[in-house]
Length: 414
Picture 1 (cartoon, rainbow, N blue to C red):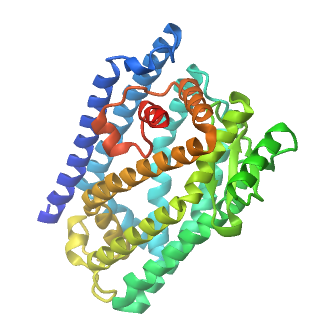
Picture 2 (cartoon, rainbow, N blue to C red; picture 1 turned 90 degrees about the vertical axis):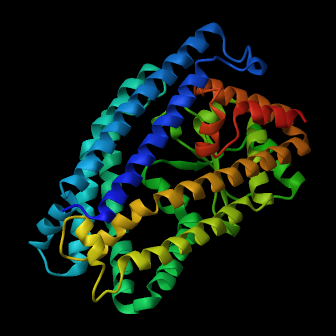
């Protein structure tokens, strides 16, 4: 029997899917208008055609994969698939923590198995066709195996601890759970590059030479203490280039992709680095961390309401999934769906803040005499990755954490 809550869940899932379809359609329609006049000449005629084909291939792929995911999710609810998995794992154990671990583990593996073909197609067909893919099938499946092991270990510990907190702290669950996840977020931000990245990529200190000298001179000029400057072997997976800033305090680290070093001049790389230092100088990393912690607190408070008490649970949620056994895992699943509208609006707000931060980081580079090389670097990175130079404003509003290339270039010219 389908309950009122069940139909609310279906409505949220459907609206979220249709919103994505609508935004993708607008973006496709906008991109078909061609390159903005201000960016004429950035792509030659051959690159223009290649970019159109790349965008179209990704658009059609996303439509198929998103529709598939939407249908699978609907079937899981209409056929009470979550209740089926729950009954299945309960046949192995009566311990609530073990049941939850088996439940989430089984769902994770099942989801991965049905999405791996899509991921493989995108990597070895689309990315390969346009010259971006550098992965081998062995590396592809090795990455998946590593992700499974890492998820089992880290995810298992997190779920177990959260369930213990839920069972033994009662009404304080959301506060203690919030504190635990916030500390974990800070820990991961500080040590992600030391603990997780080495499982997938090799990081080596940037070697002595012209580039390092230029970077050190700039850091000294702006009063930025840089002890950790690394190069990552991104070229083992893709030809696309990137750079990022991670960590806090003495654990702060700037990582340059080897593909970035190949594509840009030393001055352009220093400009990209200046942009990353700009984020640090304006305390953007700390700001986004604080926003994330606040968001986590709101989530845990609402989750505690959805879960109910450890003794009685939330039977209404269990019935919506076709079960008579209230459980932690059912509460998490239903809450995740019900939280979608809130998450969407929070995502819009966070993306707005992020785009504003990007302008400030660009301004930092510009104010230190690197506006022109930064602009050239952005052009090269966009053209080399066949970026969409004419996204729809609504699509940007919902999805973009960075301003468009045109917006950033115009800002650098101010």
